[in-house]
Length: 182
Image 1 (cartoon, helix red, strand yellow):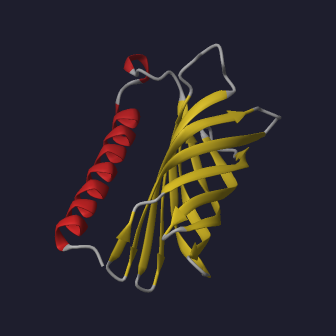
Image 2 (tube, rainbow, N blue to C red):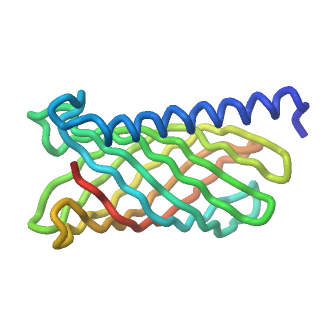
């Protein structure tokens, strides 16, 4: 178990990361399009199921997944930069992921398939034992344009690799939810 001083610092760092992500998300949504630094993008919110290995035990977790994608280069319409966050819960165990990286996509009628590669950090609290391993995430999915003007439905699958308690872990998550294009 970590000393109280380190456990408190880890909680403080995770709260700072959550506050920064929330600020970026709210800023992207509230600034008028003509004044935004990023010309276009989308925001996603959905539910998620994850299979996370806790050293030797593979366990299923339910949770949430959300992301904000921006297209910073108008000449590269298929290249986006994504900030992704997710949380998974199980009795006495919580796991949060904060990831960022590129996404490549294309439009095919009402479908928008994509692939992505992220890097970031995972915050695991297992009955008071706190760890923050680095995570590498590779995945993909598709958005299906709904009849509503700026909305799509997303299905995505990600494979995550991390190193936790001297063990390499290979996990996955499957997510689905609503996308708002702006």
